[in-house]
Amino acid sequence: MSDEVKYGLAGVIADDTAISKVMPEINSLTYRGYKVQDLAAACRFEETAYLIWHGELPNATQLAAFNDREKQERGLSDNLIQLMKMMNRKAHPMDTLRTAVSFFGQEDDTTDDSSPEGLMAKAVRMYAKIPQIVATDFRLRHGKAPIAPDPSLGFSENFFHMCFGEVPAAEIIKCFDISMTLYAEHSFNASTFTARTIASSTSDIYSAVTGAIGSLKGPLHGGANEAVMHMLAEVGEPENAKAWMLDALATKKKIMGFGHRVYRSGDSRVPTMTEAFEKMVEIMDSDEARQYWKMSRILDDTMVAEKNIYPNLDFPAGPAYYLMGFDIPMFTPIFVVSRITGWTAHVMEHLASNKLIRPLSNYTGSEQRDVPALSKR
Image (cartoon, rainbow, N blue to C red):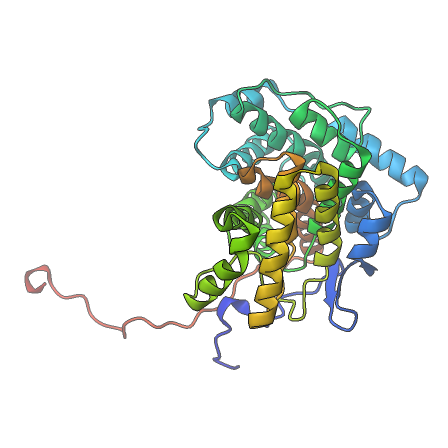
């Protein structure tokens, strides 16, 4: 056995999965064999969610039944809403979401049912309820009353309804829906691996998702889309963008939204999300929107020219969400609204042939030694 340490588990193959794969030969992320950019263009997010969980795209009958099931699971308990009203408004929305998922998990009397049917039921339950948690927190932070879900609306339309009390133009819904598909799944990333590790101890699926939320909160993972908007705010004007990037590179400043552990020649999701961002700029038709677009183009071009490092999905997603009207701290919770599909698919896949995840470590501490008597310390 080799004693070489793979820091960050870089290059380590920890398990098998049939859910998604980055395919270098076509430079594309695939879900169950389908290119993610093709899914984003041709399918609603509901269809992608079904695919991730069931392995195949649904026909019309299957999709209708799936959507009905999701709609039946919408709605939060009065106790959970009251709890959310008591939460610290200065805390990050991911803290609220983490606590809320843990709370409604303990409300579920079937928490310990880890049968395939039981796990799927809880996956759909979280898929249905997490958007309302995020929307409710958003409204409470703005001093507004929560809005109940509307069973007549689709997944993305209902999310906007619960956030803003209205459904925007179909073009905006499509841009949001595209982001949901692109964020839904990405193999053994940090939060997904966290979920699989927790599940491997035969803990419950709510605990696995709660842990995954904690992992996703970090700016080196899900929080990067928020950091991108803070970066654009710091740059301020398109005229400053190139100089800002050159200075950041010269001073070795951490630049968010660029590079990826898996992709080396560009994140395959970026062109699709960049088109959605550009579409939002066109829809908003404002000086502010055009400023963000120009800044992002200059930052992107400068980074590629200087370092040959390409943007990742968070780079266009952050400003796109901002133009949709969402607060910056809400970007990572929106990520969860999508990624709950991938996380729960991995939990179910792992538990189907479970083996406890328990890696070894390379000890670098003191050699074995005796404890001295108290009088000699």
